[in-house]
Length: 536
Image 1: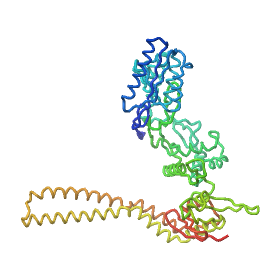
Image 2: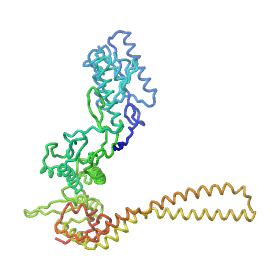
Image 3: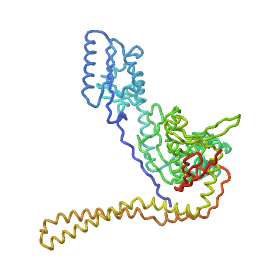
Image 4: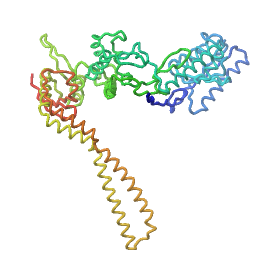
């Protein structure tokens, strides 16, 4: 029996006509033109300038970007219209948001020129309002009307395109997915027309995710995967990025990630919320589980958002480096700035050391005493700390359990205590009012409103208290996972013999440099180990 397709509709974001910030004024320009220098035309020319100046200043949401006027110039060609060409240049420089003009004939008598410039401006997000025809080029109706002046064939093309788009939209709404297998690594078309996993290619996909989570850059992953050639794709950085961000490998399919903005140019643009998107869940077999996919998206975001730590770099945004694990992990205990690997050359030999970036860029101006650490003894200290970490499995398990319980339940305890104390105060106040009524020193009707207020407040607080206590409870499933993790740590026997960047990234959260001979290693989970670095 066939099961119903699970479709999640992601609504489109509301869009303004100009896609500009609603709190900013639109920069509005006006274009005027007269074709002869006769006196009557000169009067019309001056009247147009005054009219548009007053019109733009009269609207608070508009600001004047300029009045462009050509006098005694024909509208059949644009090359001699100096002001018109200046206006187009300013539009391309994003100095104008909207253009006003009297009519299409004032803008251009050459229909081809008119359509060409209107479309150029539309691609820039700039509208042209023709007052006589009541056309705004940013609306679909106006595009149709302008096309009508050029040819009826274009109008027919727009109608066909719209019908096709509606058909595609309805299919996506119903969860009908159209697959393209030619460049889709990991799948082929099955006998029933649905995707079937290709085991060999699926292993390539899993390997890409594994290498990336191990800390390798996308370029490095692509280079490593070149030993697995395939006819479907060529291994390079962009290929890896597409694999890592493709939700289809989790068995889902997000439809309308791009859309055709203009049926004339057929240019596909990325959908940033302008159109609705449709998430079809579990529509084909998955190669990557959702937890792994989500971890990759988090790691992509982390690498992209790395901040700049050196004033000597050109760009403001930092750059992720996968070559050395300590580049991401090692920080100065004095100023908090990351350390960088530097190679000293002494007597023809290379001696790698790690130094505080702030100290490298500014000397002792901001960081007075951060030490230089030689790489070999630093690696030995970290290896000893890792081996010591696994030798004391019982202590680690206790700390991990305490940290987990603290995160799951500790944060709400103070709030729970406050609510319980306040409920006691409400109960005491109620008893005091009952005593007053019993003694006859206060009228019952007078205290009715007070009783009602106390009851309402008590009800709200009790509900909040139950909610907080529920958040503090650890589900049986979560408890089982915690116990399983702790048991694995307690039973593991691990011995690291050589420094391994991949393993270090997986195990260590941070390495803090305290002095030339002392570092603090913080393992994932919060366990801290002090380690001594040998002097060299």
